[in-house]
Image (tube, rainbow, N blue to C red; front, side, top):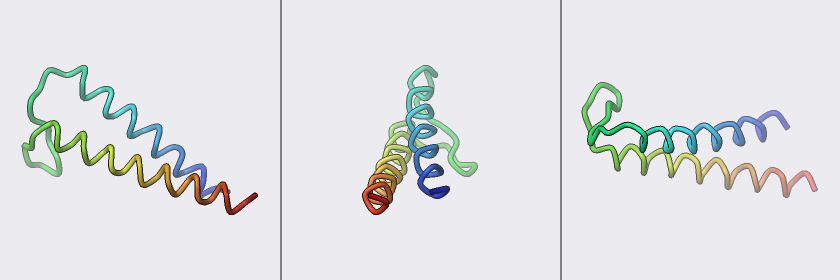
Length: 64
């Protein structure tokens, strides 16, 4: 149950992070101290969000 809620929190956090990256007018962002393309960072957060959503759905189906 607790891990399922953490996955849902990660999904919400990744969506907010992607949304906030569009409000900034930077073409690069910091990722572990390196300047990288903003689209790469958005893609990574999208990947993290999709994986967490899949895990959330799988655990929810397991409970039922």
